[in-house]
Image 1: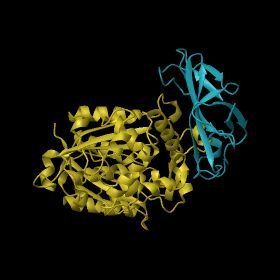
Image 2: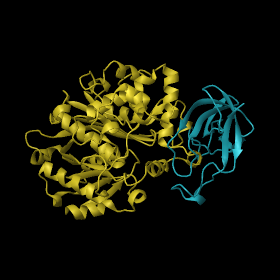
Image 3: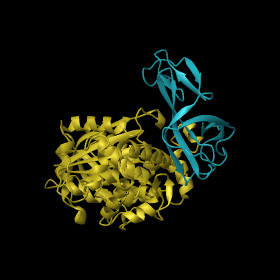
Image 4: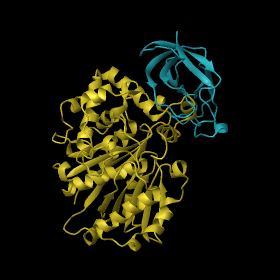
Length: 119
Length: 385
């Protein structure tokens, strides 16, 4: 789980071909997996697509990196109760949804990643 | 410069239809040409707004199929895909074709066939517009709605009931729309007690999955009399489109719909109008929260105040600024590629005084059509001739 930074200090997750703020090439990578973040908002989705756990709780979280806020979205670890403002940490999962069940071509993207759980 | 006129309009019944996409498009297209008394062979450009016919039914090349079915050869054809905003993008493309002088008669037909798929499958087709870091977590458009609604209620101290009132209002409007998928009133309790879909949003906060098609016919205003005598046409006075981030969480404020802010600013400028000039609006209420976000983004209300307008009845059919007199996507239904076209169909009917029991007093209408969760947005302003 890496955020990407351009020479002007703009940070995004995920990375982009060019920085969405200034158009420079993003040159730095920042590992987010050993940091904590704050819950911006969350939901529990009960009508999920093929291959996705049901219900599926999700949160948008914000990491603070040298004065820049960078946000990420991810599943919540099962059984996690969170509210806006809570502190969470990333927890690695090998497979977030069944890559064979959905419409997207399996080989076109990664399926592992980080869920969040309250600190 | 010659303005661009809308001289014909039609829409099929929205809902669960036995017909497949090409038949739905053909029905709307034929009725639209008939509405204007135009000959198919006179069509110069033919656009089809559609998000995912290949994914939904294994049918591609719909514009060419439609040209043949209507006898519109050798018209230039093109498919317009801008996800849920394909209809609005089609309006923009049709306007460009006439305004540029490339076409003297442009037929735009939007349509989608969805209900043969399960809700889960249809949700996945739509969610395929998301970024890989979103898709792998099972993020869907309804989950964006839940995430954003929670943030909105938290930030602006809006009561949960205010969202439910959008559904109640739009269902009430849909009752009088013969083309609507749901012609059924719902009360506040029914919405508030319906099953959770994306906490805090419930079943009645979401639009249904729908089959249907809608069509519009465009020409230079100087030729409008030929198809629509006695000023029975409307004029596209402003139209613009804009994008926001693909990755939704990267927006600095999730409650601000940047694409709607930008596209409406440009459309107002082109029309020489402002939010206060608008008499009736169709907003993309795929989810109840989206009606708040757009009503603020296009400048009808201050940021964080859209919910109060609904609470106070300002946006009711008999209110100061009626929003979604058609019933909106919420009750009329949301056949993806058709929705942005059907929004203009409603404004056209309203401005011509042909909206029947839904009629309001209006000479300027605005439509906001949203793709993704505000990822790409078009705003169109339509006026009386």
